[in-house]
Length: 297
Image 1 (tube, rainbow, N blue to C red):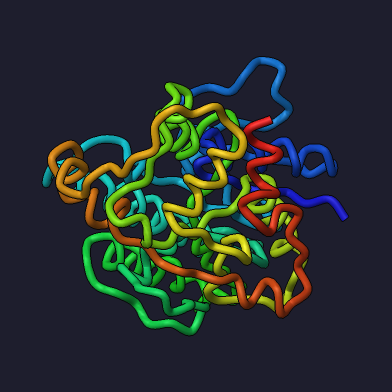
Image 2: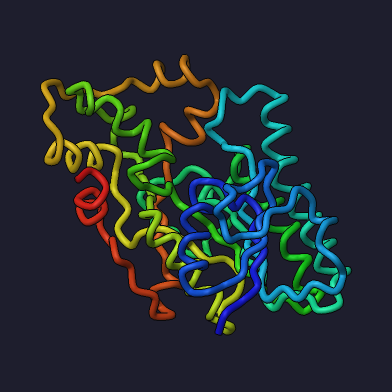
């Protein structure tokens, strides 16, 4: 059955791939974007949710909007922008749902594994409590704003996304940069966990959740096999020609990117997709070797 779906953040790294996947199934898409879409794009682009009339029949909303956490150094002004870009648009989505004569049956809204805060070796599933720090507080507030849709009778899924990897953008571009110059490296001790997911699996999980009426609440969208920073380095060395192997000291990362280093790079979380696996979702790229075989090649 085809659907009419609104996507916020539909022109981002995940959004573009999701658009292609949904359109290939015949779904009709409304994309909230500050920029006009390509002239040959079949999606309908809007610049404000106010352009959607009360009579619009939406089957689902996928909320992916938000300024990049790694967009630039975390100044107080940029941290405020990060928060506003998530909380404000989510509030606008809830307001849209409240005024529609026929509210959508599902709201799938992005969050992140930053919800759990820095971790050690303990595996974190969806029942793990919220952590501490800017990222954790941001995700908790974002999710709380999203859950207001439940009072409107809408099924809510909170997409706790890991680091999304693919060949044409996202975090991978920075992660592989040293390897392109023959340098194999990891950050800090290299023992911190990287909970990642191939973009194709992230998109497939979102598609699957659209058609899973019995699933709601937090959903870890990460591959089943997280890897350490050192493990990622070793996997990349098997697929690239390198001449030097060394660690990037934690103090250097703090000097370069400031507070972001401790929140996103020097520490990590060992997050597992328990709900997706228990409900029968199948990953195409379950291990980092599977993913890099596809991405690096």
